[in-house]
Image (cartoon, rainbow, N blue to C red; front, side, top):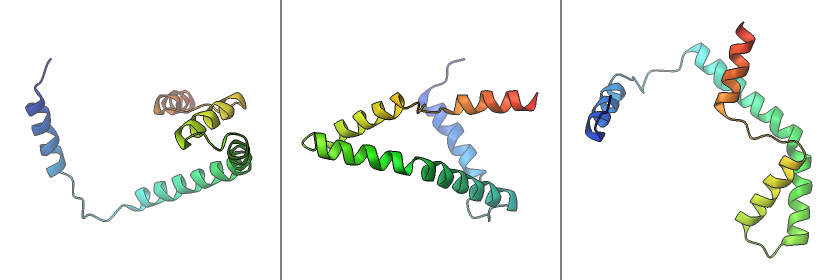
Length: 100
Protein backbone atom coordinates (compact mmCIF):
# COMPACT_ATOMS: atom_id res chain seq x y z
CA UNK A 1 0.00 0.00 0.00
CA UNK A 2 1.39 3.35 -0.99
CA UNK A 3 0.17 6.57 0.58
CA UNK A 4 0.92 10.11 -0.40
CA UNK A 5 2.67 12.58 1.83
CA UNK A 6 -0.59 14.51 2.19
CA UNK A 7 -2.43 11.36 3.33
CA UNK A 8 0.32 10.65 5.85
CA UNK A 9 0.13 14.22 7.18
CA UNK A 10 -3.65 13.87 7.54
CA UNK A 11 -3.23 10.66 9.52
CA UNK A 12 -0.67 12.30 11.79
CA UNK A 13 -2.88 15.37 12.32
CA UNK A 14 -5.84 13.14 13.20
CA UNK A 15 -3.78 11.18 15.72
CA UNK A 16 -2.41 14.35 17.29
CA UNK A 17 -5.88 15.80 17.75
CA UNK A 18 -6.80 12.73 19.80
CA UNK A 19 -3.94 13.24 22.26
CA UNK A 20 -4.74 15.28 25.35
CA UNK A 21 -1.46 17.15 25.88
CA UNK A 22 -2.87 18.96 28.91
CA UNK A 23 -3.77 15.77 30.75
CA UNK A 24 -1.55 15.27 33.78
CA UNK A 25 0.75 12.26 33.51
CA UNK A 26 -0.47 9.10 35.16
CA UNK A 27 1.26 7.70 38.23
CA UNK A 28 2.74 4.96 36.05
CA UNK A 29 4.09 7.51 33.53
CA UNK A 30 5.65 9.54 36.33
CA UNK A 31 7.27 6.40 37.75
CA UNK A 32 8.59 5.44 34.28
CA UNK A 33 10.11 8.91 33.86
CA UNK A 34 11.67 8.76 37.32
CA UNK A 35 13.10 5.30 36.70
CA UNK A 36 14.47 6.35 33.30
CA UNK A 37 16.23 9.28 34.97
CA UNK A 38 17.67 7.02 37.66
CA UNK A 39 18.96 4.53 35.07
CA UNK A 40 20.49 7.34 33.02
CA UNK A 41 22.19 8.78 36.12
CA UNK A 42 23.56 5.37 37.10
CA UNK A 43 24.92 4.70 33.60
CA UNK A 44 26.53 8.14 33.38
CA UNK A 45 28.04 7.87 36.87
CA UNK A 46 29.59 4.57 35.86
CA UNK A 47 31.13 6.09 32.73
CA UNK A 48 31.98 9.53 34.13
CA UNK A 49 35.62 8.83 35.04
CA UNK A 50 36.35 7.09 31.74
CA UNK A 51 34.78 9.92 29.72
CA UNK A 52 36.75 12.50 31.73
CA UNK A 53 40.00 10.62 31.16
CA UNK A 54 39.39 10.38 27.41
CA UNK A 55 38.38 14.04 27.21
CA UNK A 56 41.51 15.16 29.06
CA UNK A 57 43.71 12.95 26.87
CA UNK A 58 42.19 14.21 23.63
CA UNK A 59 42.46 17.88 24.57
CA UNK A 60 46.08 17.54 25.66
CA UNK A 61 47.17 15.43 22.67
CA UNK A 62 44.84 16.54 19.88
CA UNK A 63 43.63 19.92 21.08
CA UNK A 64 43.92 21.53 17.64
CA UNK A 65 41.42 19.09 16.10
CA UNK A 66 37.83 20.39 15.81
CA UNK A 67 35.33 19.21 18.40
CA UNK A 68 33.47 16.91 15.98
CA UNK A 69 36.75 15.16 15.19
CA UNK A 70 37.50 14.78 18.89
CA UNK A 71 34.04 13.34 19.56
CA UNK A 72 34.52 10.83 16.74
CA UNK A 73 37.90 9.81 18.18
CA UNK A 74 36.39 9.55 21.67
CA UNK A 75 33.60 7.30 20.40
CA UNK A 76 36.22 5.13 18.70
CA UNK A 77 38.14 4.86 21.96
CA UNK A 78 34.98 3.98 23.89
CA UNK A 79 34.19 1.25 21.36
CA UNK A 80 37.74 -0.11 21.76
CA UNK A 81 37.01 -0.29 25.49
CA UNK A 82 33.85 -2.33 24.82
CA UNK A 83 31.20 0.36 24.61
CA UNK A 84 28.42 -0.70 22.28
CA UNK A 85 26.02 1.90 20.96
CA UNK A 86 22.63 0.51 21.84
CA UNK A 87 19.57 0.73 19.65
CA UNK A 88 15.88 0.29 20.54
CA UNK A 89 15.92 -3.01 18.64
CA UNK A 90 18.57 -4.31 21.08
CA UNK A 91 16.28 -3.55 24.02
CA UNK A 92 13.29 -5.08 22.22
CA UNK A 93 15.21 -8.35 21.72
CA UNK A 94 16.26 -8.40 25.37
CA UNK A 95 12.75 -7.62 26.60
CA UNK A 96 11.09 -10.22 24.37
CA UNK A 97 13.58 -12.86 25.56
CA UNK A 98 12.92 -11.82 29.16
CA UNK A 99 9.19 -12.39 28.77
CA UNK A 100 9.48 -15.96 27.48
